[in-house]
Length: 426
Image (cartoon, rainbow, N blue to C red; front, side, top):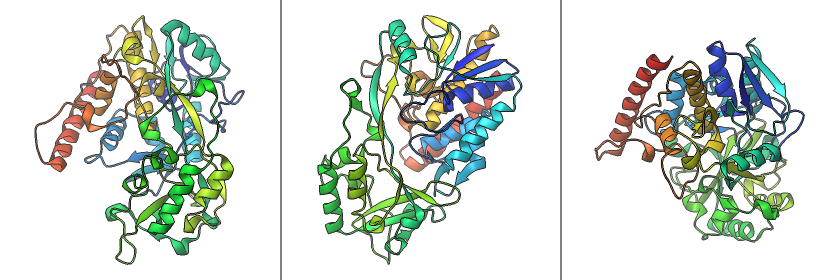
């Protein structure tokens, strides 16, 4: 029996792969007996912060390329996303509830997958730990005792509003640069409206963090109020950038984008508006955006702790512990950042565990692939280590000036290598 602790994206990917190989798997999660501060659903593979899995552009975006690598390796995350996707322009977004339900049903359909609801407080000697950034205190303490503690940063989620409370007469529908099929609802702001919003956002009261929770904020999940505090135009060059958007032939001064949160289109996510403001302040400040003046908030943004290992000191590139080759870590805890990246690490941990349990030395994909480059990143010596998203910077470079052509060549090389890797290990 192979023990997998944690039934999020990484744990479910590992369980799915091992199940397809015929292994007996015990997938353990403390839900629904106990919930972390960020989880609410009893289903497996719950998406907490957003329903977006980011760009689906295979030849123009590193995360899009990673998704295609995962599809070639039989990813259940990609399978579920394809079945439950909602319109989101060039991004891959899903209906959260249907996505989680699909993965839950798929894993329950395997007779060799045994799902247990209980809290694990001690590290297993053999298996995969994929308990995520909100690992419960008991197991977190066990990990600290064994590996000398971990680091943490803060992750924040964006508010969700009811579709029927949005004033669509003050919006326009368009994807940036005309890509996609008009899936984003854009809320334009004049200079006066934008500057008032920023002023109130920066001055709004934030939720108090406990002393033990204070730490670094990860750039990729920066709360919108923290970004705004860096300068009044910071949001106009980031979350609220109007570039590539026009209404009536004119580019707005600033734009907040809304993305459909579910397949029915009854709720919308405030794109890039992760926040740690108090709930009442969120309603007050975001209601200053004309289209959201009477918005009904179905879920307010929240901030929570993300814990991760000092992986270069602890893990090998196959995600196994340096002091125990049969204990693997996967997900954000291992030092990758993002839904897709976490799922990819779980898939690789499952593959490598299977190889090692069958007497073979794990074969890590090369750094010509995104999945291989991220695997190698978490194990490479790095005094200033922090979790890493999929990006072209981690890939082995190709010397060519034209950026579009370079990305195309990187993608073609990667997919060729993944196909060869699949033949080798599957």
